[in-house]
Length: 110
Image (cartoon, rainbow, N blue to C red; front, side):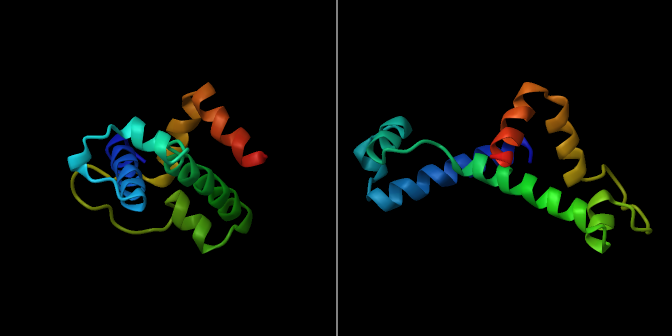
């Protein structure tokens, strides 16, 4: 997931909470105030990351066509232009971030 997608998820999460609590934008409540009213924090993005990590482990153990598709080892032509960031590439960037990567993995293992 890239940063723009992360921001969109966080915006959607606040929008969901505002809709549940029936807080209008006319009330001029900040996002932090809305989160305090709901007695919650931003957890949607971390939940998505945790589930993605579980799914990755599941696919790696399966070793079927899904594993080939995820690793990109299916034969075919590449499309023109810049290649899309694959799921495996995003996992590698998470792994290269060190401590930032270890926290979600620790949450998955619990």
